[in-house]
Image (tube, rainbow, N blue to C red; front, side, top):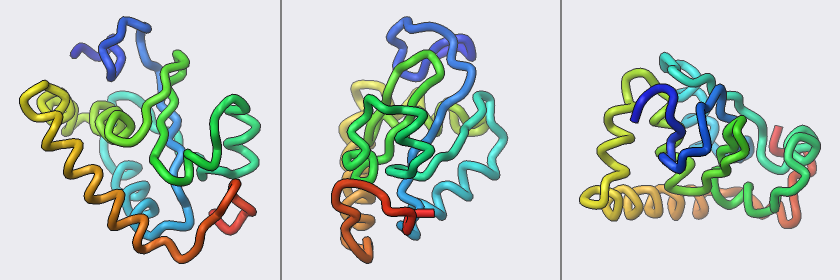
Length: 141
């Protein structure tokens, strides 16, 4: 995948930046946010708390309750990635991990990547201190 491609390879065009909606109330998500933020980025990552007023204003068409359950990434070209696609898009944006993202998205490795991401999501879900229900009430900040 070239730098001018999009993470899904769908032909939607160049990605200038990715917005990452993450659960700011989750310790695992906050750690992932810090880790991603501190890596060299080929494509800038912009972080917005999922379910927040900012997320609702910027992306009114999204199911914001769902964005609190699964990491969601929105490309500036309109593509939306959820769960394993979102994690792979984040890795694809990083200078040192683009090759890994490309390898993990191949038919041979994608099933294993999906299982790993699902396991991480299950751990995250078990650690959530509370259910935000229909959305964030600013406790996620």
